Length: 500
Ligand SMILES: *[C@@H]1O[C@H](CO)[C@@H](O)[C@H](O)[C@H]1NC(C)=O
Ligand SMILES: *[C@@H]1O[C@H](CO)[C@@H](O)[C@H](O)[C@H]1NC(C)=O
Ligand SMILES: *[C@@H]1O[C@H](CO)[C@@H](O)[C@H](O)[C@H]1NC(C)=O
Ligand SMILES: *[C@@H]1O[C@H](CO)[C@@H](O)[C@H](O)[C@H]1NC(C)=O
Image (cartoon, rainbow, N blue to C red; front, side):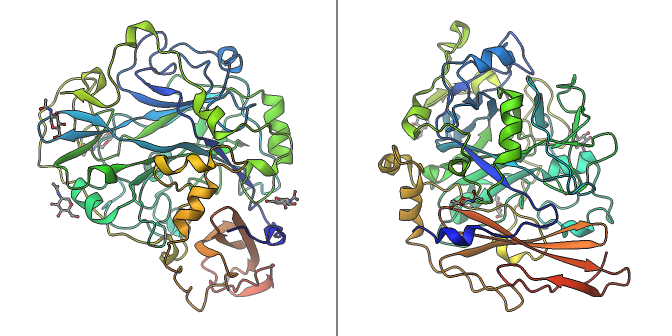
């Protein structure tokens, strides 16, 4: 299904910004390597690693840049992206890795600081490094994780915009059922249990991780790899906190895991850092871009399609080329089994630790059954008004065995996607207050961004290939009436009044 391209040209207003989806269809490998946390040695737990083949346990920016290849689609992107791998622990205690479907996707969101909507996005400086999430975390401190998040517009009022809070909301575990409307991204902040996944997620689960995008403007890294950066107050967008006024591209990792392959098999899913609940999910980034080049891309590549194909300065490679790019595993790890049936412990002997207190190093802790793993029901992203969700389901793939047809296509994966979506039941009819969605699209989410007295309503619709963003800006008086409404291409109807 191809869309009418002219529809992609939508008016962009008031800080709603472009983004790219950096596809990394190849995986460099799985290994206990982490140049940030464990430089020069082996790391505690195994990671699924993507990006430049220059990656190693002590990689520098130069090493990444000089890597022979990248497992991502844009050849100029020699960055390294890594996050824990997922395992299944069989009832007999044997661990087996879970298939990662379709590689990884890193969104680059180009959202300005809401306080400075016309401000520019600063490219990552050379050698920029950061970590999102906390590997030792084993609880959720923002109330009942089974309850959906409050509307974003209320987070500040509820006192839920500390960095500590935002970091917990920056994790998502999206239950995939391609026969239903997609769940919203960052909607569920824990990994559902096996029973739930078996019953509700026939297409697996998508891990989501949002990185901080507000920078202190001077340090390329910091001792904890976090304190030089901060989240804007709505995680993906919003206001940057004081002292972090330089806006970087907002990185957002997505990986899909074929948990469905274990349907009916007795056991549990365990993230490589010994976390069964997902609260300790995290990810690492080292920029391997040339900062000047990335700045050009950030400045020029603002097509709202999200497609790297629409950025003329990017050089693209095929899915096959991305898949051929592999890591040289150091000799110390060459014989460590990290995929397939790997034996009676996680790589590195990491023990499962349930919390609620933080996990401690590798110290085995008795597995206690007393900590409940929460569950929330399957909620399509479209049904939660006023929350900000990413375009769910965009990075959806068929089983890897069926994606070969798309291998050399200029838009990898599209064939598989089209195939998959052709069996979708029609997307739900939006409620009358929602804008009309053009034929062939589905409404993915409705979002509100508040900036001073201006509330922008953002409606995201998608087809199998493109994501588009349309905005309507409404100026709201202090007492709350809508004063001015500018209709955009989709003739959106403002139906939210003035709590701001
Ligand atoms: C444990 O169970 C799995 C799944 O049935 C099986 O494949 C594996 O061989 C078993 N491992 C051992 C050591 O028996
Ligand atoms: C998994 O979650 C369900 C609720 O969806 C709950 O009923 C069940 O007891 C949980 N299973 C385990 C093994 O914790
Ligand atoms: C954006 O991309 C679409 C294709 O996805 C293309 O047709 C359109 O011309 C591009 N717009 C701009 C302004 O480059
Ligand atoms: C929850 O996790 C945080 C971070 O690891 C920790 O500081 C806190 O003590 C934990 N809460 C409980 C109740 O253990």
